[in-house]
Image 1 (cartoon, rainbow, N blue to C red):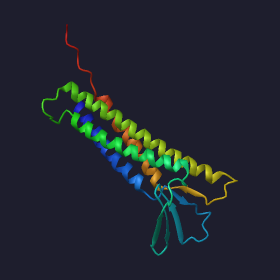
Image 2: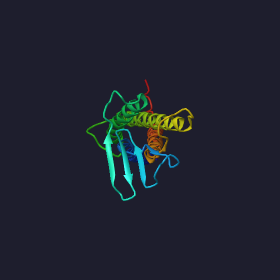
Image 3: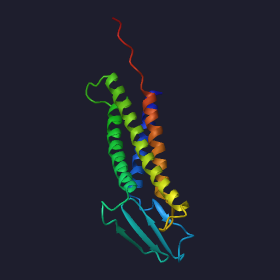
Image 4: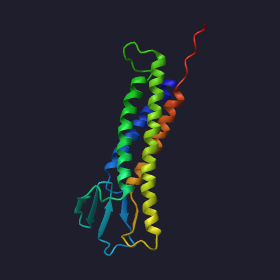
Length: 191
């Protein structure tokens, strides 16, 4: 049962990493509210890296955010959290695969393999929590600006990129939990 739990945990972790990557590169973290749109034929949306507009004819025009220092703090922090989450997720995949019961790596003992799986599980948990913080913080800012009567800018709503991020963080936390639960402490030798 432990080996099956490990394999499922690693598979969930790999899927979560793919979703985290998709979320990070998504340009639809927020979309312009339909009640704000002057014309229903144009759609505006933004991600962590650029702002885009599309027409009903299918043409999309995107522009990168021009300055790093001029960006809001929450956007810079969300970028950093997502990149860190991807790096930690990649390391956790490698560490977890090396520790699986069904993999062979030289003369690695079961105790070391168990510790590798446990480390990979903890890293998956950390990666999922970082993604969860980033997407939830960004979503909180979008909701706060939407309902703020004193906000003078364009009102946006939550985009699909945020939902992908929430799914990714859930899978990473679930996969990491499975890996951590599959760890069994080896019995101590009698002295």
